[in-house]
Image 1 (cartoon, each protein chain N blue to C red):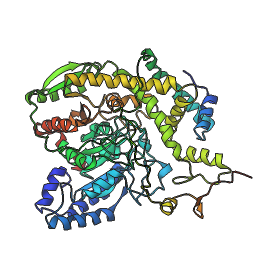
Image 2 (tube, chains in turn red, purple):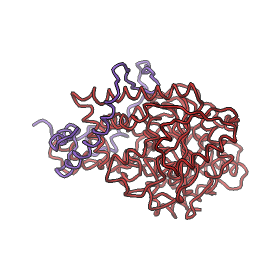
Image 3 (cartoon, rainbow over the protein chains, first blue to last red):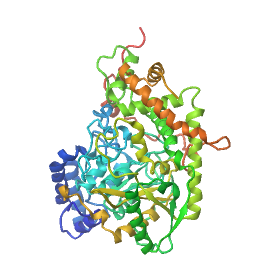
Image 4 (cartoon, one colour):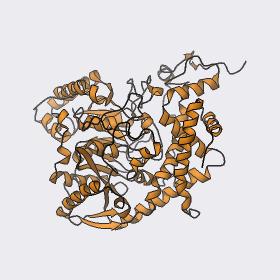
Length: 483
Length: 95
């Protein structure tokens, strides 16, 4: 059951090949058996999952229920779950049972899914390797000496190893797409404002966006349909109707124009380029046509991001003060000491580094030189994409510069870690949707292909991804140890 | 751009994060590296560019000024580090 897609499992439930209870129990058993190796789950919600499964079985028996009823899912531990620990990968929230459910959690519950548990992640989603988690690194199921990517590393590893058929993730600079690429799964970062951020713990509010991670584009279409939609509780949620993402999956790619940004291919590693070349050949056979395009300012996306994201993070994380919830230091001698030690002890090194950078960039006299400058660069990058989408339907490129790197390989050098998101960050700055799909292997490690679409073009992206998956088997590969 | 250890300690105080001397030395090095890296932005003339705060350039939504959420003080205070009589407790501020 754990090698099947959500769509296949849904068909199995409808045909009564197995019950939701059996399905959920199967995945709970898988978690028991493999989580010790992978460290993908922080919390397992056994009773809640089984209760949801029984409810789903009752509905399915009456011929009721929707596309997701009875299917197990897992949530990145950044989404608030009522009365269940919501740690965000941090010591600061190690004792935080959220008092309410995030909109995404409530929507997936309402769709009849069973929550298996909460997934490990980089602390406050700040990282590209899952090594900044308070709960320790997650292992990549394809090579346990390698990172699964981050920050949604627990989500990617759990799906790849068959500990859950689907998971949620969040993507501020590549945190869904990069781990999806490193673990050989499909991950979609929707348009900014498409999925509610309410109850999704904030990192950089003008960039954060939640999305689905699963084995196939079809599964992501199923999940996004349930996750997306306007939410009055999120002030940046966009009131735009949610289309039936599955309806467009089979559309022909005949004549679809795919843009290749010269900047994405100029310095690309030759083995990565070979994987992309093979994928492009598949697309040509499907009728798509390629056109070279240019995104001249894209080289400035990582610098602009490392001003904007830390600035917004320093402001968002000011709320962790040891007063209302979360960690509090022992025996504070006065209020100042309470704040200083709570935050000094509760946050890990990377989170502190980003708060400090952001505090500096926003401090008196520096605002124009850093934050305002970065916001102007951001517009230039967004304009580059707008121009490109007047010329092509989607953009294709690598998701990452290399396959998964080794655990510990980049922890000593923050900048080298930041540069592992060089192909994903611009998409967040522009607020566009992007998807990573498996496209091949290098040295037994998966390689991701990234597709970028115009605003609210998720259906088109899923269509272009799905057609590729109909003629390739990369998304079907399972790491041997977890088969 | 190079930050001194004293500057880093000052930024940490502004951010209300206690760091020790060893950490300050490491952050001075890291932060200086990051600031050098982001200085690449200066090569581009942006004097005529409007800053972009929101990817979709949407205005802030307004709603009627009505109470929409009930009071859940007890639920929220149940997870607080220290409360008494419905109040959050912190170390004494005024003598």
